[in-house]
Amino acid sequence: MIKILHRRGRARLQRVGLNLTTFAALTFFANAATAQNGVPLDRYEPTAPGDHLFASPDTAIDGDMVPTAALTFSYAKNPLVLVQQGSTEQLGRVVTDQLTLHGQFGIQLKRRLFVDLNLPLTALQDGEDLTRGNAIFSAPQDAAINDVRVGARLALLESDGAIPGASVGFRLWLPTGDPDQLTGGDVVRYGASVIVGADTPSYVWSASVGRRRQQNIGLDGLLGSDVSFTAGIAAKLGMFQIGPELFGSTVANSKIEAFTRRGSRAEVLLGGKYRFGPFTAGLAAGPGLTRGVGTPAFRVIGQFAYAPERKKPEVSAEPQVVKRDRTVTQLGGGIGGEAVGGAGGAVALAADGDEDGDGVLNSADACPRVVGPNSGAKPGCPPDQDGDGIVDSDDKCPNEPGVPSDDPAEYGCAVDTDGDGIKDPADACPRAQGPKAKDPKKHGCPTSVTVTGKQIVIAQNIKFATAKDTIQPESFPILQQVATLMNDRPEITRVAVDGHTDNVGREKNNLSLSQRRAVAVIRWLIAHGVDERRLEARGYGPRRPIADNKTAEGRAKNRRVEFQILKQSPKGKAAWKDGPVVQ
Image (cartoon, rainbow, N blue to C red; front, side):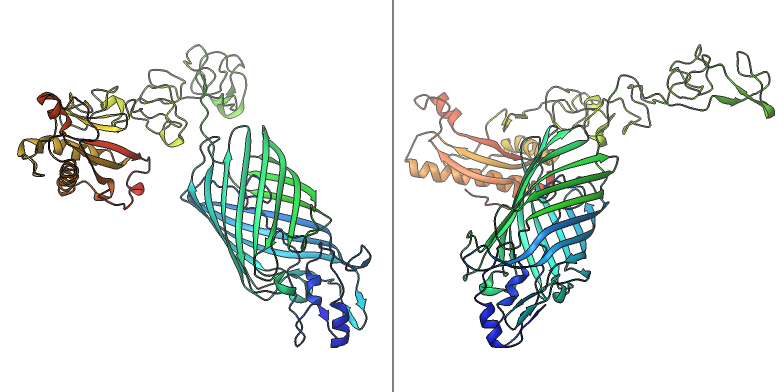
């Protein structure tokens, strides 16, 4: 904490410049009437437990109710050095060494939200007291609690291979630190950030930009609000990963110009992590790139984290062999072969008699290398009720034949080849999309309404009264099929009902008529159970003919209503969003 003895000494110190590795040194420039609060010297914000990189956070949240924890340390060399303004002459190394520990705890919720708590502690500080005229800057020497951080990350878009995902982060810094020890500033800080990145089998990358708001606690706002940035990439080499990162910030207020040497800081790291089971150990180090506020000469970071990794089930031609104790209980004269010794009736089977040790001899064991009961059609094999080759313990649908799947929740379950929402065993037409039906022979088979590409195709045109938007009753059945299909297919989230006319009459009148007819169809569908958030009406009049308007047959084809699928999502109802019904 700076001790300001009188204004003459303070004025002299105001002529002292900063080596921009300095942070708390800015408290020399206090208000003339009152001493300035201390400031948090360590500006490194560790990523959450389980994230791939050290400074740039992930976008993905993989689990539901999955707890995580980590212990992270950050060592900074010479984070607070003062030099004479306009030269390289050092006035003193106020803080030469600083070690900060971060106790981190978090929980993943619904693969969508991650909430975390960071309890930091500056465990070690060392430096030299600086005397300048009649002012003294005492170097902090004691361990002290830092500002506690509470954060949340909300996933917006999931990464799909090299296609990046996106999330937003929120963070609150509580003023729990000790200003005298340069671990807090006695002000509440809060911020938000946008994160993008991708996770592939061979590499992972992420980048973020954020805005932090806080009360100014240094000269001219140098320690006030700022804009932060991070970026990093790492190559995956089995359970090990390695790669570079860049992180830093620049001031964001009206007093200091952003992206200047005085108002910016940046650091670079080269780090690696190694995963073993649910645990991860990592180490990173790197120099300060600029002489900006808060940048040490170099920094070393270490982390040990617990963060279970979501794994997909592995498919193999043969189940894993399970080793067992080769002793069994002797019943009567033993279980085949020759029994060898053993008090209390315990005998050991010959090593080549029961390879998997499940009590079924190799000669009678249908699965001699896999443990299983001596029962069923295949003695010695694990239970497989549906006979699909996937044992019940791994099969998520043990009562119906299925196939392996990359989705753990669908492993061993039947597939839906045509994507109509009806699994193949129950689908009478597994390779052609169709709606549900009470008749098993028609269940899942195409009707007069089908999905083809990005269009709901109807076998006959919707009929209207001449020059009006009144729907003829003979078209009600086909509209009912459209409504049934949409209600059975919630993944179809947005459909445009397009009205078209022939070219007879004025174009303006035809445009209006086609729009009104599209709206009439939407009203009918809504009245019969289709959610209005999934529908919008468009009128094109005669502008998009599909046949020659010079013939009666062509004009009849052009007078039509089409259903264009604009959006689809596996989230179903959760993806239905309000939008304008009339375009």
